[in-house]
Image (tube, rainbow, N blue to C red; front, side):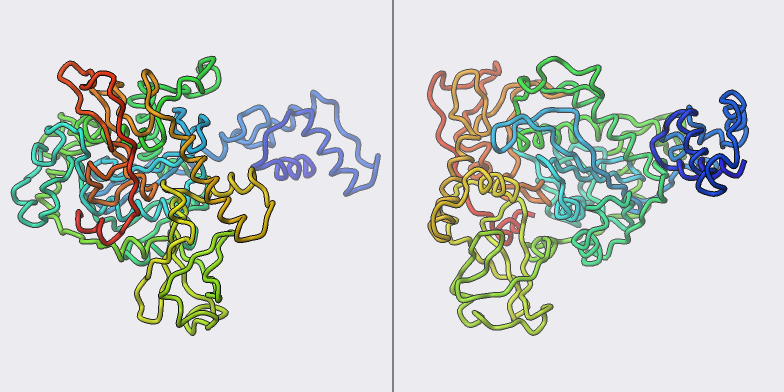
Length: 528
């Protein structure tokens, strides 16, 4: 019996096997403890009956592996929050939709959302092609605390002025709400995380400390601790994802034969679709978990619940500027040499570094300087100089790359190109190759070939009509408030105005090429 209990203990938390395998493990334990052949194993039928008696019902070898860890060990208690932002749950999962990646291949993007428990509002959502980074989670904090802008092409009914909230009183407190979408603006007090690598990283925790947000890790092996956000992922897949081209289904058995060929949207366009669906559908859809004390039989929509709670807790604007955005970027430390700053085979240089070349930083570890880098746009970095401010340092070959480029695309280019010449020529060749790859990833507009630079006339879930991709691709991040002007957006540049019948005006006239501009955090803050 002691050997059986030891075998069950060794199997706890591991992938489940069979009773036959448990019997063999018990035999190994007996042989190691008492010597080979000293203690004989009982017959298989007797051993099976013994194992069933000794094993916990949740740890029986015949049960699924995750039953024991997923089952609650105490009575279920619902999570209660009484004001917006009091408790916000954050999590990441794969979206059940195939999208077009930067290199033109079909990819399944990752979705990270922040759900306000009090109102069940999706206060922030970010899609990434692969490998959601800590900076994406950190920017969610800023995105949920500033108004979401109304994107070009959205209907007038999606403005906050038409939502079930005291708009006039809110506008008197925060002028940014005049052009805001009908989504809640909450200042998070406590963030609930699931101990994922990106949420326990130094970058995310530093961002929470900067914005004075408490971080509450969920208990181990307790998925019910974040039940609200877990259930929201299922709702997004069933209410939104299944209506989008490239839907993969919830599992392999429900997947189509050629899902990769159905992918029509880039990750930026899919982000635009998701943002519009959240504003038009999710925020106005009654939720069974939202009840007002005076109307217990009526299920309220997230926006209605937000309006009801505003009367009890009020609204305090939280202004964030370009400097605040830069402070949320991941931090790393590098020396400033005579050639500038070298990061991952890229050289960054500017005249502002002249008096600091070759000199150590008195505040940085090992004499290195504090660098802030956006992994989704590596064309510039930001260095903290002795004056305390962050200064932009461009990549020496930034003029060669006319589109935002992330670390993932850079690694792909380096692996495919290979080193063939000296370092300076090699870096210039890599910059040229980066530009060519990004140009090939965005094919020229043509009949029946929607691209990232052309609006698609595909009805999104919950609405009908032409769809315009207006996601700000300059940083690769979802907007943390504000938004880019329509004429500067890479996904709307040159787009023709849709006609009343849903067709594009202008017939066969070619579209103007997309124009990219460098991202300026301080200029962006002017729109917040």
